[in-house]
Image 1: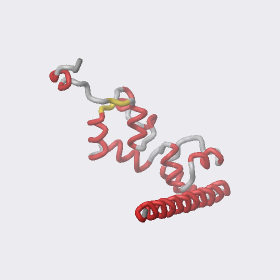
Image 2: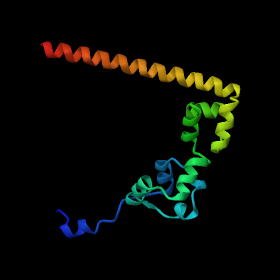
Image 3: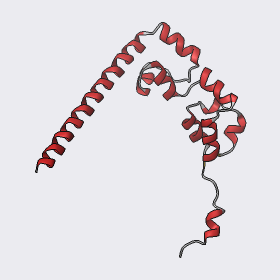
Image 4: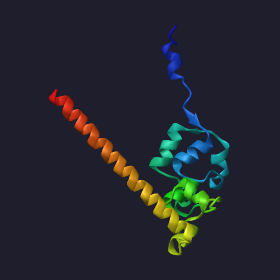
Length: 142
């Protein structure tokens, strides 16, 4: 049995937990306003914040504290590299800048490792694309 058309128009908007919304916005949940943490976020509200971020979101993205994936990206290392470097707490933009200006040994090592992994991933991707093109070329001839 199909639901009546009127029930579709009264459908509740899709919502997500504040933790999911914070992750999608790239911010550290405990640093967000209490009002953000207290209520589910609608998809419409999330899209509005992405398109036109409120002042608290602009400031949080600018100064931090930043969540683990953002810290890893800004430092040029993996999340695992942060763990190996004993970085367990969120960092502010100033703390990240200080690490980049005078990188400790673990950061130098992890950045090199991360670069090697990225190079290898690019090599494998290119090889797969080449093999795919060869296979497609052979199939076109047949």
